[in-house]
Image 1 (cartoon, rainbow, N blue to C red):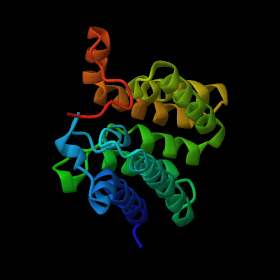
Image 2: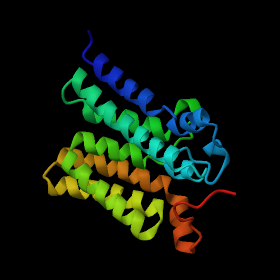
Image 3: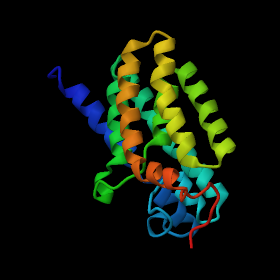
Length: 198
């Protein structure tokens, strides 16, 4: 078998796994509103929460994080050392899913799942920071961006330079996906977590 084939399959498999739109699947199965038609139109847990169904939002969050972690673990099981490659595929699959015309989520939950699977100490601290920032400000975007920014810093603190580069690249994409949120935060019009969509 060609040496490039297994890494290519891992990358593609990670993308396909990451592209599963759990926010849509969960809300449709429960008979709730399509998250693409409310609020920000995003398929992530925060927008699912705007349906008023906290359980669905929590389930979406766990599934989106889980698919990132699962991609890493499956990649490593197939080819040791390929976890980062699978992570890249899963992250881009979530953010740019082919099934939704490349209009996916903002990547926070999937990113956290990836970080936890690649280096759990970094992931655990980033998770705590995400929860702390979210509950302190009641802005989901602030929590997500805090965790994203913290992840490469934390991995560098743990002397994982290989992961720092990856986490930094993914964190920059997370920030880019939050550019509208940043504008609303600066203008004071950002919706606080738990606000229902009209």
